[in-house]
Length: 156
Length: 156
Length: 112
Length: 112
Ligand SMILES: Nc1ncnc2c1ncn2[C@@H]1O[C@H](COP(=O)(O)OP(=O)(O)O)[C@@H](O)[C@H]1O
Ligand SMILES: Nc1ncnc2c1ncn2[C@@H]1O[C@H](COP(=O)(O)OP(=O)(O)O)[C@@H](O)[C@H]1O
Image (cartoon, rainbow over the protein chains, first blue to last red):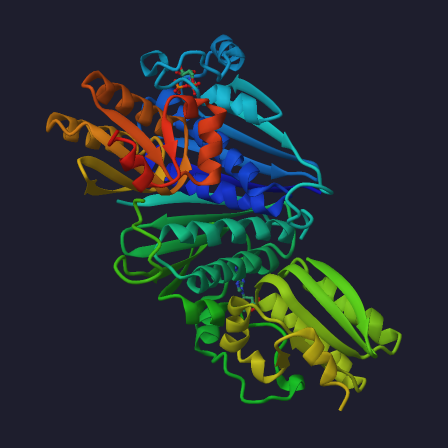
């Protein structure tokens, strides 16, 4: 069985707290630890922030759509916008960049540019598709119904 | 300022836990006590259940849409479906029926039929509109930023 | 929702976990009916692990109570969380059911 | 996010409450810059009441650190919740910031 909910916000940074809060709590329906739920929230917030910042250039007149799909062993979230698409080569490059930064001099530590690397580190699978003006970043996290956060079965 | 999120599910009872869980947690962003957040969840679950049961006759091929809107002093939630509309006279009648049941003999206690009365008891304002095939039940709850659950300001 | 069964003295204790709503109301009714067919008519419903209940969930309790009452049995409720208790009170169903602080006390009440 | 200011010895303690994300990152940077203009350059950022941080929030901390470092000041971090600390570690920023268990310890570290 699959359970599914769609969340939609206007592309305004002020609405991100609503998405993050909802996603975090929705993760309590699956056997994820609190830390894992926080990480899922983080990945979704990074992706939604990217859509607002980069796809829509902070213009709040658009929408970002999040699909949260629970199957028995996997959580799939996709984040979709209708703005300027993400360059897939840039994405692959970001995925390969280590979060590790050798230097401990703050001047050499980048201020931004960690979003996609964080998502790629935390999630089991990340892909991006731009089709007919709709761009979706899809991320998947597998979980195990028998171990994990012991929050009871998915169909609780 | 207003913050807004739209939640959409297929009209399957199995998806109601997703809606309830998300709504409950979204209420932590406003100064509602845990009990009040539970009550908001209850009202939304009652309304969504009604759309699936009565508007769509348990047919899971349709959608129910929930709009959650936070302004500085009021939470507005509307639950919309495209099924058979609710008879407004029946609704008004249900609103007037007391939840109180004089009899303590279980045989005289109705099994169902409490949903709308619960919503009307808990919420400050409830209205229903059916227009161009779209039916929306709108409910409002006022809260006070200064008293209440002390969960911090809305724009936290 | 998950239903965990346990037998204490000659009472069936059903420990419910999760959400008792329209998607799980029938599970409870069926469980009680299955037992009733085997002439097991006295129940304690332990709701310690129920986080959420709605009018459909309450309806399944009322309907179960009616069907076992008819056969001479009873259903007692135990271990309500505050939020769940408040819904019993809102709908006045705390006047229909005997409610106990824990399952043991509810089981004992059958012994009289 | 809410920023509560407090002055302990000659250190400005900024207690953050809520979510440090893209919608609030600039608030923190501006607050630090405002103080820096008044030559108040030593800060403790107390995150005891921060439930959520993302890369934009972390970016605002790095950028604030850089700007006060340039003027001879410093920023120390205090009271990270477990989940927040894990994001500092994931991004290796625990190597850039001195992190203390509470604001008092962080303030004291400036006295040496
Ligand atoms: N949804 C998106 N749409 C368009 N471009 C994007 C999107 N997400 C990321 N990008 C591009 O990829 C780059 C790296 O993104 P990220 O790793 O999240 O860091 P940051 O957003 O801090 O720059 C961005 O600077 C942007 O150019
Ligand atoms: N969304 C809806 N669409 C159509 N009819 C509805 C809807 N909600 C309620 N109704 C009608 O109002 C009646 C009372 O609803 P309610 O008080 O929630 O109790 P119950 O759903 O248990 O019957 C329902 O039986 C149904 O006939």
